[in-house]
Image (cartoon, rainbow over all chains, first blue to last red; front, side, top):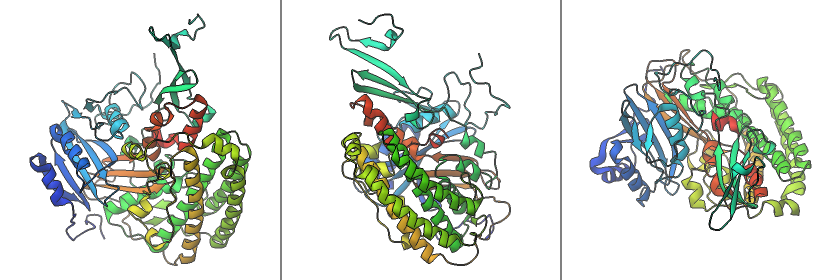
Length: 165
Length: 381
């Protein structure tokens, strides 16, 4: 197998695709598959409503936020929510984007408390403001750190002087 | 009233009730924080009113560093995350790249990975057993724990040449085949571990002092555990039997017979017991895997230069501390990842710390923190 081939040639399918489409309804920008995982794209304005609906729906019951990642696509910042359910064997990926010159996404801390530190980390490293988060103080960077070291535009300095002044 | 002791700034007195609250700092250099972790405790007498954790003292920017390394080189970064469970970390990462590339792993390599990772889980839990004994005031467990962990590390040294930071798992297999005499050596080791396990029963498991010290503290409702994203032994101690080896099976775990120990109340004693029972299960898993260990190659057919197709994969695995996830984004055609996000189990578990400590006695705070078994290398990344 060469590096260019996709591992799965057969079309992936998920039993929850229909239900996810129903719940996301008009908010869904796209529903597609990435490898074996179902992937839902929504606008940033609707992310909280969609997440809350995905969690409260008894057929889906996405009660566990596995991971919240921020990806820098140069002109846009993307927040990726990996969801899972403990009562059903379901998985779902939800993605939403914000332009890099207006970087904010509403916080989902009201849906899963576990979003807390992931969002603070995204704010630290990528400068993505999770609007409505109660405490966005630096978590893993020190106070007064300049720049957003997660972004592609951040150049890693040769040597960093800590507490320079 | 607060006098000019230099501490007065930390005392906040309610003007109506005259009740005073004192905030004290614990860490980042403190033996009970198990690494460079700091928390600010707000006290009302002996009771902890609030906790504010500070992390990031060990932040090395592993995720950003990975964007500048080849896919094969990144395994070394994963060794340095959870530095007491190196194999388990490497495994999740190589599985992520294998999934993105569609690489098949030879069966023998899969078994070797499983055996080493389960031994590493035992070593990690033995370290917890030893240090948790120290946290609760017992000196003996650390001797037993480190003695047995040392035996495991000698096996690792024989296989990989290193006691920690092995860099042994490769994308598509493992670095080289097992040395001669590995299987009988591990069988002898398992017998020794069983003896050590019985010793542990006498030192902590059935110790009345230890039970008094740990039972009934640090418990929060299971729904809250899940809401915070707590996984691993902490979640299972709360009665939820979520183990990725069962819930989302990978490798050859489906072929092996083992069970997932759970607790009932989720207090510190249950967390300890779940880990101890997991040692027992891991010993059984390793024994079964040794029986089935097939012959054959240890490295699959992998291109020399790895260029995963465009797309993103999320792969997770059951670490000694919980659900370790790797989110890998490839822009297609490059030899480096576009983005690599690491979902550390300790990082997520630590979010629930304030809820667990709030309302307990100050003396219990270190016992609760110790029961979480955090590794700061992976919290801060």
